[in-house]
Amino acid sequence: LPRWYDAVRQAGPVVRSRLGLWASASYPVVSEVVRDNRFGVVPLPEDPWTRLRPREALSTDSSIHPINDSFLSKDPPDHTRLRRLAAPWFTPRALRERVGRVEQVVERDLDRLDTSRPIDLITEFAVRVPIQVICDLLGIAEPQHERFARWGQVLGRTLDGVRTVRELRWLQQTVAEMGTFFDELLAHKRQHPGDDVMSDLLAARVDGAPVGPADLVATTQLLLVAGFETTVNLIGNGVLTLLSHPREKQRFLANPDLADNVVEEVLRYESPVQFTMRVAKEDVTLAGTLLRRHTPVLLLLSGANRDPAVFADRNRFDIGRENARDHLSFSGGIHYCLGAGLARIEGAVALRALFQRFPALELAGAPRPRSSRLIHGVGSLPVRCIAGR
Ligand code: HEM
Image (cartoon, rainbow, N blue to C red; front, side, top):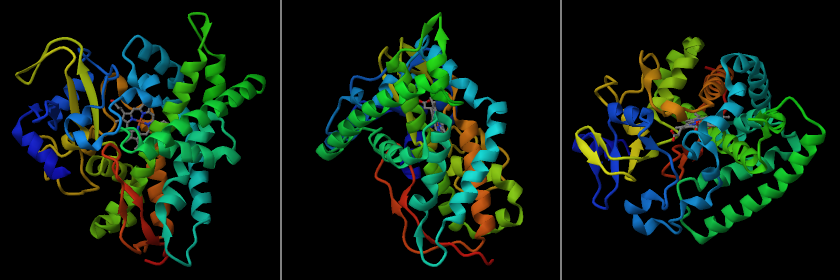
């Protein structure tokens, strides 16, 4: 992929594919477009990727995915109204209060790891941390976590389009199951509110009116989808990248306080979310190119993260990199990842605790890459958890 992104960037700041899709892997252009209100996220009538690889798509109708009902897929004023309702849970102060809980979750998961045989770090650790953190936030009890994780995986895997009949059935079945689950859960929370996002949303008033059930469910589903698979891959990519860069791993072992910067550099180097899209809401001239109203643009976040104009020695994984935090892996502008602070905490706590407990952690087989184009990471990561150095 980095090579393909390089080819796009070298062809120009904004380029048009043979099948007519505009794309950019240039840092200045990507960061400008996500901040420019002449571009919106209005759901597209079709999955834009089909214009790049037409034979890969089964459904060109991107509106079948529930993420399209959430504020991630809305422009102001709806976006502003709904994002504001969830935002109090992600303020620096709210996050500081959550750190202890994340540490607890991580330590408990590490305690449960089998050290006597090789394990899959993705299912045994990387998946467990974020699902517990999100369920905690949403007020979903432990017996439901596994089901919730399964739904999150289906929604995450179909984010970039539905390619087979099996995937389509999977998605439809998941949406139906979640619908029933949410109806029951909302009824329960109305009677027994807790200290969680869902109870807060139920109690919220916007211009004197309660939040409608559709917005409530869409916001909760968004937090699950946006906060789950992304974070699984931050942790998975972090472990794999450190294991394949032994010098950087040693540097981290010698100085665990580098954890925050390790997370930034992993996000830059192996971005869990590869791209986002925007649509011109009016005619816009971008880097000297006229884009007509309604033109979609593919913004390659991970391509921007390797732009040599911003990141010196860009293909080097360097946990001491000073401007690592300038990456665009959380996008930017009004849709800047609401959970960025939480993801950073989860990533730093998980990587630091894992490598402190198992400094000699090693690969025990070949990792299996994921098939998604949007979400980047490994589907399985066989490792041996070894404590000695
Ligand atoms: C939006 C990445 C973790 C909640 C986004 C966007 C990106 C992103 C790229 C913006 C997409 C766009 O501009 O079109 C990531 C990555 C994560 C992560 C790489 C982990 C490493 C989380 C977590 C949560 C979360 C843990 C919450 C629990 C959200 C929400 C939005 C969002 C609610 C929508 C923001 C809006 O539209 O205003 N995320 N995310 N994310 N993310 Fe994250």
